[in-house]
Length: 238
Length: 55
Image (cartoon, rainbow over all chains, first blue to last red):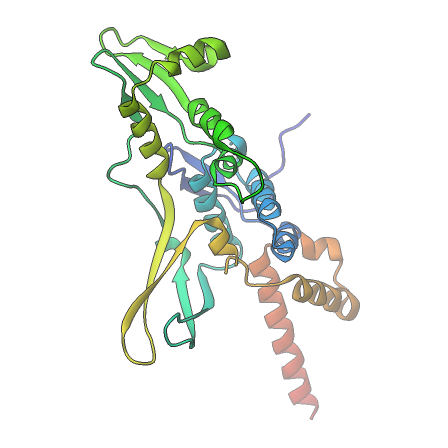
């Protein structure tokens, strides 16, 4: 089998979570249709699926399932910028004056915001620390609070949080234990020994995860300075 | 806001290009969206110019 023929222009971007430079191509009109069908469905699951499909098609040599949610958001915005145009215009309703306001933002100005308190490294004690990985988009969906009547999500939330512990490192000899190499029982025993301070640090890791955020300043009809913040994949789609 | 288009406009544009101007749907679908928008704008300009020349 020969190499795939690339007949579209290629661009480069840096994946926010890893700092790795990757190549991508713009999406085509046919692929735009996938996004429009997802948008029409107004279903978050459909939108996520469409975005993953497009990124999978457009990104060269990257497994979309290994990317963090904020990576996917950043990548789809960049692909969109090269496929349609850099500028996005949209209308909002001012919450105080109820007037319609047209806002615009440049895709190139959108960045992933990293919280100062965020740390992938969590100390267990003086000898050991753990390194966290970012949850995939499907895992993030599980982490979100379930609606009333959908049953408790506490167990699955805990399981996902624990699944995001990638490695344990011995400070003294730099020995690395990859948790994927151990049985579930061994991992459960290991996690069972965590102190409440460690659990709080793990929780903080998830609460302060980087996110794509963009604030646009505007003036309402009374001349008051305000700003509108766009945050997360869904808000970019509505 | 990510999308500058909707499904109805998408199909209307593809239909108009294929039905009236004999573009192949597969050719339109393999364009990049900004290229399709440029061709549409140029086509509309061309139609307008032709109309003005005829009147």
